[in-house]
Amino acid sequence: MALGEFELIRRYFRRDDGPRNPAVSLGIGDDCALLQTTPGMQLAVSSDMLVEGRHFFPDIDAEALGHKALAVNLSDLAACGARPLAFTLALSLPHADEPWLERFARGLFELADVHGCTLMGGDTTRGPLNICITVVGEVPAGQALLRSGARPGDELWVSGTLGDARLALEALQGRRVLAPAALETSRLRLERPTPRLALGLALRGIASAAMDLSDGLAGDLGHLLSASGCGASLDADTLCGLLVASAAVPDPKDRLALVLGGGDDYELLFSAPAAQHEAVRAAGRAAGVALTRIGRLEGAPGLRVIDAQGRPVHGRYASFDHFA
Image (cartoon, rainbow, N blue to C red):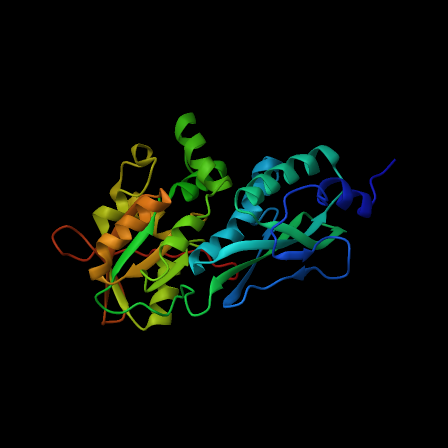
């Protein structure tokens, strides 16, 4: 017997006995979910859509896809310094594949439960595989990290590593050959990103501006610079060191292109006054995340990449754009 829409929801996504964030007064089962807001807090809301063939390969492991679908949204909350509360899931499926649904739900809920984020509703329909999640978090009023607070003289930082997800993408597309170990490491970064929620919380009151890196450092940093009315200089050697699988990419210019123009990193990019340098280091230690100072904000507009001798490194480092 074919699995119907409402039985699909009941079997794989309704969790009457599962953990529920206390902010969710009413979850799946009614026309709307109900959230109980906390006095003195603002809600932070973000949506992301993942489309088969555009954001992920058709043969991706369903459990990894469930993880990534939520992780990319939680990364937005991290960039805002918000704590997760709940999320909705809109899911378009070609057909009701029960083994696939079981694995997808497992990956989704494993990550959700780690961060106390409750599935509170959504929709299912038949169609091309398409996953749209809207996540809701909370942050004390006036304490959200924004893109617009950076100032000339601030230091620029990134969490974790950059470029490996792009490296995996090129290998899977047949544009680059990687040894099995390098492919395994970089593919993990592509398919199972880690949202830096603890770091986002630790940076409240320290960082002057922040955002997550989804489309590539060069392009995403451009958004922060535009919002803050600044320019920036980045250290080329430091950037080259951010690639985990650096042994697989011996050419420094190639490494630089992966780090600056790659995507799917889902690390945090943020600025902080130089006087907060030690506080930034302490925030990284508290969150258990490696942080790297990659450059400095400047008054002159534009983005400059500088080598160890202070000379400009020229190149075109374009980030991803769905409509370019």
